[in-house]
Image (cartoon, rainbow, N blue to C red; front, side, top):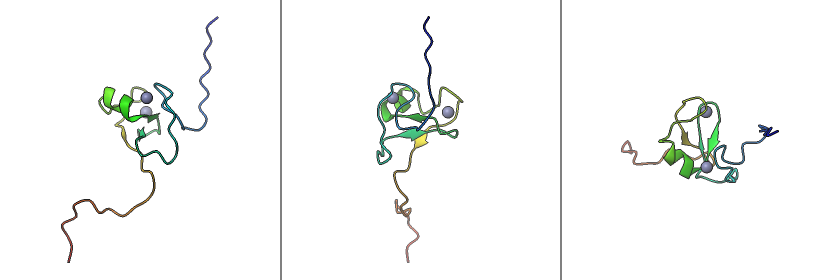
Length: 74
Ligand SMILES: [Zn+2]
Ligand SMILES: [Zn+2]
């Protein structure tokens, strides 16, 4: 009997390797359905969620203004 029960509670660890991902961890990746993976697995998976085929994007750690090379300054 090899019944593995995968309880989906808080997404605080990688779904692939169970690597702990803290809410403040900026190296976590999520897909459109909030499947969570670590940066290593996201890289191995080529940025594609194996569960739903969605694109893995970097999980925002906290809201901040978009200030990455914005050339529309006055
Ligand atoms: Zn992982
Ligand atoms: Zn997914």
